[in-house]
Image (cartoon, rainbow, N blue to C red; front, side, top):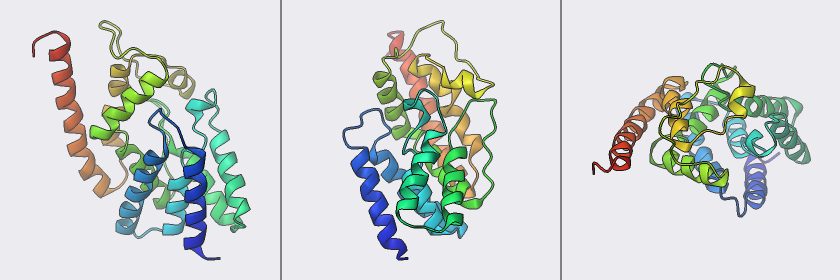
Length: 217
């Protein structure tokens, strides 16, 4: 098995499947997570084959686009991996990462069991915050036809996966329901360091957003 050939084939397959996607969960999101996971994985001395496979396939069938069914992603990932005739332990490890990766609510733990999983989870979460994270938040909100902001409609700190998956609140609320919580959920040292600056950027953005909303700037 040539791991570079396998990675290239799966990258091409993912890129083809995400063509034309406009919700912020497109190929370029996958690409950024892939590259960030490579960076973090090298620092953590991971099994880079596992890291790259999981990063590339982490959003192959996100629950947000499958009526909240978070079993679809691991199932489709398994099919793609099996087509490459990969060892069963590799397939199982990657699918376990994909099944556990996603944020599922403020009160729901999504603890990874392996360092490879922690690295890919951090890479995905870093892409959800900062300047790119803000852009993706509003792209997804527009895709779901959600309002940008509704004064008086408070965020909800969801305590269950089902509650979080059914959420239909304004995009600004998503900052408080997820994005601003991710800094303290990073697994690796470097991700925690990177998250600090991105978190501060979001706080500054929100401060200006509310001032412009009220006509103060």
